[in-house]
Length: 418
Image (cartoon, rainbow, N blue to C red; front, side, top):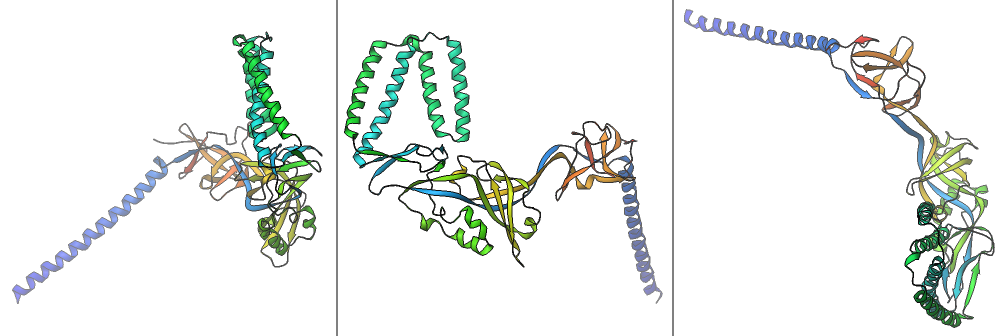
């Protein structure tokens, strides 16, 4: 019996030893954690982020449909035509829009005439430049200005102006090289081309007519079938249901014989179906901006009307604009960003904002010193604020300040221990 009790005492001692060891380990972990927290609070753990300037739109997205005063221009079946103006060009009443040819043969002759005319104009310019003793440095300046002007016309889409500028640039280039021109050879070539041109013009006699603008406006070669339905007059009785009906029509009604259309008036309207929540942020007469996101362009607009219906989760917002663009006249429906306001200021992460007494602000790290700087919120996003940037207030946040976004026991004018 005595021999059996000895192993039992040994087992009990081993259990007591294991419990004490576990207690010691847990205690050590707790002590280590406490010391780590103390160390983090007083000896480091700061994380900073620079204050940078940002511009943020207070906006929402939608799809906008253009309602305009448009009239298709009828062509003539069985005849060929060549446009004279470019889509997006402003035209006056009775201005030529296209040349109508009696048949394909007449159109083919006209296509031979165009390069001939261009060559003759160039040769005429070359002959004129042979007698022009203008300073080459001055001509170089004019060439540079012509290139800059053409770049602007490309951006604005002004096709007719761009064509005229290209002709002017060719003339200037010839004037620059006028000292190397053989006038006799150029005169002979010019006379031969003129004779060929006269012969072709004789073959076209009586086989062409011109299509002119019935009224002033912007020309577009895109006829989509909505010209008679998405009109300013339709806005007077517009409801959400009728808007759906009108925008489902279109392509099937387009007349293939139309040569294009003229957009009349000085205003256009953009209709969007938006959530009632977004519509409630707007008021009639309010000035906004619209960003055509696919075309990368903006236009100023005002709220023409807001159409709400009882128990509907959506509403119609009608925006009015007067700024025309060559690309815009061919648009019908576009994804848009309706911009209520744009806020420019400094970006401050939300987790960095703290209170110091009755003042709201952030702590920054200036060298090795923590400093408190007040902020004035302009706009709030999900993760950060846009705050005012002051050029005169020494106590306000400025660009490139190192904002403390993580730290404990922060104090104004406290030296950070390292």
